[in-house]
Amino acid sequence: MTDTVDTKAARRAAHRSSATGIQKKLGHLAMLGFATLVAGSFSLGSLAAPHIGPVALNAARFLIGIVFMGVMVRLVLRQPLPLPKAPWRFLVLGGLMAFYFVTMFMALGMTSPVSTGAVFTLMPLLSAFFGFLILRQVPRGLVIPSLVLAGLGSVWVIFDGNLEAMRRFDLGKGELIFFAGVVAHAAYASLVRLYNRGESIIAFTFWTLLATGFLIAMYGVPEIAATEWSALPSITWIAIFYLAIFTTAGTFFLLQFAALRLPASKVLAYNYLTPTLIIVFEGLLGHGWASLSVIAGAVLTIFGLIILALSPER
Image (cartoon, rainbow, N blue to C red):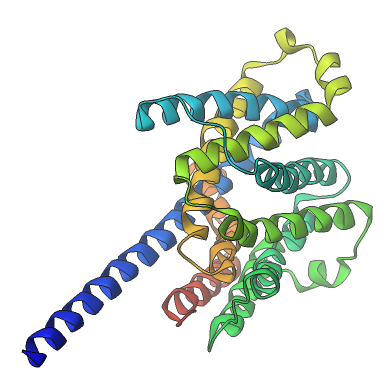
């Protein structure tokens, strides 16, 4: 009888372990999708930027993203979404993301994409810090070395393998503004897990999107009112809809899905893939392929992320 009980307990433990393993793999796949969608937004975003202000662009994308996510909530839950408990949670999360998006576009107006990209690579290490500070997640074994390795590869890609360009890099006002936004985004990944109170991912995503869009709209009323919406070229609207559906609703969902299954350090480590994926997209679009030196940096980034994905975690 004892053997039977022990055997059943062992089977249950093995089943739980297998289920957990599958959830973690899904978390990694979600962040791979997240990085791909973000990378695709850079080309479209740069084409739209000259025609619309950063706050107005973000307000439009979030409005469309909220409507899209609201429809998805209705289709999935098949009932009206109840008001959330402790709505202040979503104002905090929305505030962090609103701050990140506004500072990103502000920085792009002051400095180069290369410089902002270099600041962006600090996010995974910052997320590991907040994971420890907020959730007491202690990176184990090869997590920090693999983050550093992937980060080095990403920086190499961003600077096109040019050591002189790396040497000339210095922090200006735009870089400092974006750094503040990166800190906010890094804290967000840990707070998602801390603040979730059993809500479904899709409902949690909707309320976070709503709070983010509301705060951006309140901040940008003058710019939104001054924008000549009917005069915007078609490429701007294409970019807005892509950013709204894929890079807003889609990435919010994927980020929160992964944040509930993976440590914060692993979640945002996939941001290191963004420069590499941009290279792939640019090549496929016929804009030319990167040099072998830059491709080597991309391979180093991927190698670091593979080590990270396979490393043990709490």
